Length: 400
Picture (cartoon, one colour):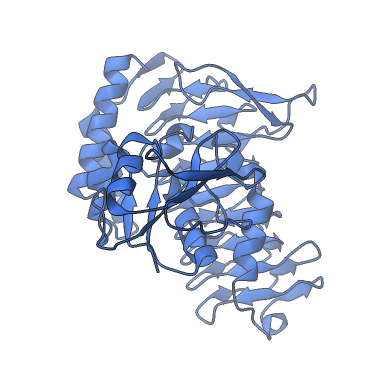
């Protein structure tokens, strides 16, 4: 069997969500994308290939080779922008499959040929290719929402489901509920599975009178607040604190939206804190197509979506009563404390108040990040700190 390499070709436009992680490490359903790829192919990854800025930070959290080829006579190189859903055939040695844009989805190559592909993003001369269209491949951040129905359904189908969930909460609907034995479900909780299954991971706490509508996924260690309404197609990553009303959104993990306020059709990074009564608009008054600018200096792009809330980068924070307009992007490390809604594109490490916008000083930002992470018994390692410092320096130099 060929050794599996999952690579990030750098062609995914993920906005702030791609700042601190490779594209395949995004939570794109209940699972991270690379976990779904491994499951789809039936084998674990033997090595990774990432963009230069992610080499040190990804190496610090992984034991498998990063940007160094694993041993093996044949290497199966899979594009980490593939969601892991749909039938992606494994090509024979010396062959590759391309998507409709000509990008490599998967290639089975000898080590020297694989090295050429991963370093140049071009296939070696003589590689036999075929084109395959229609697979869910991530081009832009909002594609995580476009394909969420498929990825979440795939992840839920792979989970074992509890035969006695109805003994632990009120269940309505024909789809199953999976509640880990270590999860705590308080009285008054309702699981509505008319539209899809519900997964409750290990160590989860669901406080009294919360309502969860399937399909949805609540990752290990997370807490759902009293009276919360978690609508369908919502993914709560590990160790989050979620309250109020949330629908059709993905939380990467370790983030707080513990108080009232609505968040819909949104993507939330890690270590985000949304202040009480922070609300997002996910629909224009005209019911028109939402456009957004993923980068402060980038073009405004049509998303093809009528419903689209906010994309919120890691370590971003909002004050109480913050209003986020339709299609808002908050950069990594942004701090929002304004009476009116903030701009619809907020730069990385922007400190936004009614007095204007200035840059969050990096040492003060890192002090806060360490304090926040310690509350989840996590540490900011040297590699991640270096990546944040580099991102801050680039943002300052570019005038984001």
